[in-house]
Amino acid sequence: MKINRILTSISILMLVVLFMSCARIGTFEKPAQNPPAEETKTQKDIQPPEVTVPKVEPFLFKPLLGKVDRYTVGCVLPLSGSYAAEGSKALDAILLAAGIFDQVSKAPWKVIAADSRGVPEGAKEAIAHLANDENVMAIIAMAGTLEAIEAAREAEKWKVPLVLITSKEGVTAENYYVFQHFLTPTQQIRALTKYALDNMNVAIFSILYPKDRYGAEMVKIFREEVQKIGGKVEKAISYSKTQTDFTAEINKVTGNKLTSVDKANPKKKLEAKTPLSVGFEALFIPDSYLRVKMIAEQLAFYDVRGIKLLGTNLWNSPDLLKKGAEYLEGAVFADSFYTISYYPDTNNFVDIYYSVYGREPEYIEALAYDSAGMIFKVLEKNDVQTRRDFASALIQVDNYKGVTGATSFDADRVAQKVAFILRVRNGKLEQVK
Image: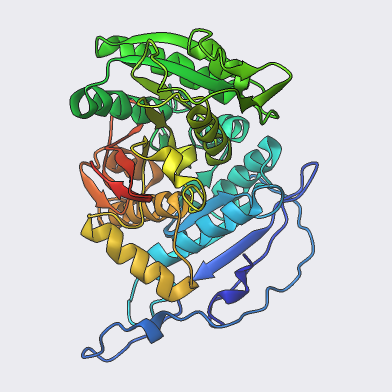
């Protein structure tokens, strides 16, 4: 997504931070206006026309801290590289939250965007520049595991409040200025296992998981949360991220009961059988919707029926139910956002976002929108004049009602969020909690 949709009246500044590489910087400021008092907001008021981003020459980074501008917020996003699409979507949401496209609102906020390129060094350079040269009050950053660690260290170094949109747990530890706004893996699985026990009457689980860091972490957390509810994990079987045939893994997780498999042609059944009796009630699959669909279809092929399928937010994709939805009937997973939610704030956000960008938002846009919304809410307080004031005020946020549900921060500055529990029913997704 290019930034050339932003209002022509917005002053854009693209700067390049140099250490060993560069980061793109863009400034987005609400144009000063004094609309008649009787005007009201309409969709035409927030349509973003075309704008051209000028090319500028590199500048020499000078870490000189000036007076903080309490009306300016920075954001560090991967605007180039492998995750550029996600970074651009997050920027869209932040600008929308700032009221940049609303020609009626008198919101004074400025947004300065810096490109992390999706790498740790880029995130570190961008944080230092925004803190020292742009003198922003606070920063929103979308980061993977390694970028999140570097960003947190740099923010604490310069004592600039940083709201991290990251799944990496533990990044706020001993960092007074660092906050995490994300439905963490632990929060997801805790909500999922509790729902499985309370609403699905399931207490015995097995796991099929990918051989990678994410899969291993999910298995560890799942075991811990199942133990807390008094349940049991029967088996945990791993598979390669590149494979498409899960016959061997299904055979292991069912206790070697696939006796009807033709060894020369594993995908050819010799005879139809009744559903297999297995030693667990639900199967947890922490993987992308693509592999989940393949596994679900192969489970049905081998008559492994009657068990519940459970997953994480990686399942939440418009493509999950485009084909083969019948194999996922009754499956449940947790996420922080759902476009057809029964929350009014969520529905309003989806409508406004679509009217501006012509597409429905996904969870990354929703988290970015709420992150910015909380920041601007805190900055509306006149007694918040310094970065330390801001950090002290942000940790006191309690039950902020956003598009991703209610949010509060605990003593470790980690957002406490209630997960959306989503279920497949009649080939469609529905929010059940």
